[in-house]
Length: 483
Image (cartoon, rainbow, N blue to C red):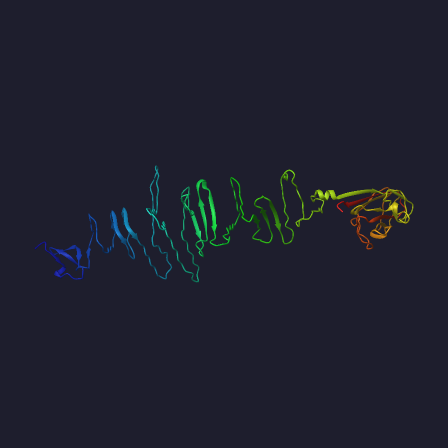
């Protein structure tokens, strides 16, 4: 009959695919016995649904409106295009295995979205992957909802290896954001949580809430407080705050290092409950100076009735040592200067002890100690001798001597210092200013000191090169009235 349906060459049905013939001509359908499948040579157009449980193997395109199934599981899907409106399934698994020893770039999933065309109005959005996970309706238990779970596992051979969890590159647009995260302000947790590989409970968190208020938190899952926040900046570290900059150290100590030097630094200590603060420098060489370079005034404003105190770093009273040093009330009150006029007349070239008591009499201290010596009221020193005579002093040795004695000795007999000025010359009626130990070195004899103690008696002698006759002499003593 012209439309008889037969297998190829009249073979019986077996495991081999053979074409069905109609009227002696092969059709597009090949078939075999039950369990060995069938094949369509050409296009298969289905106007309804494809239902059942089986494998579909294709060597060409799948073009359809929808694919609805429980699972799509395969080693590879190799095709030019999969074109559809929706793919709906319970789970889609992409399992890519590659074991070639030749270096290559391997991709398990590649999404390439190209949006072209002139869009002149409206809002146009191009989204490569739109991931929407909803987990609702739970009434108890532990519920975890994860939008994307990424596990990167590599190895460490002798070569160089690296791994990245996520690589984000943006370009081209006027405004670009590499990563945008929006979590509920009232939710516990964080916008970003970075955990330690040693212990996932040791972590760093970033949380942003209303008004852009942002908190950086480090957590140590233990009894210590070693979850340090270290910022290593290869450049400047700029903090530009519209409001206050608040440093809240629970120890009350803020330290300032230079290039990681932990032995020489500056610290600011604040005492809770009082607000008292101490700014302190630390230096191994005792050169940890604190300099204030002010383009204006320095104002110190203690509470009325309070004090501005200068102390040594051991808490003792501060004593200035340079002309530019600040001083204290105690020091000012304790220092007194005594300008003692000791004018005299002498026609001798021998040493003359000046009348410290103010009585004009010349000569030695013998039998006239009461005229030429005085008891010192405080500890102190003889810091200046001002001398002038009506007679020119020609070249020779001009000697100044300070004699001293303590209780039990009437006349000063111990040489406290002797200064010998060699080749001394001085014009008549010309003033000579001598600072003991400064203007000229002390002679080796004596104590080589211009200092004295309270209660000691002293006498000062001048040994000229020429008899001075009428002489004006003023001695300047410096006393420590705290003694």
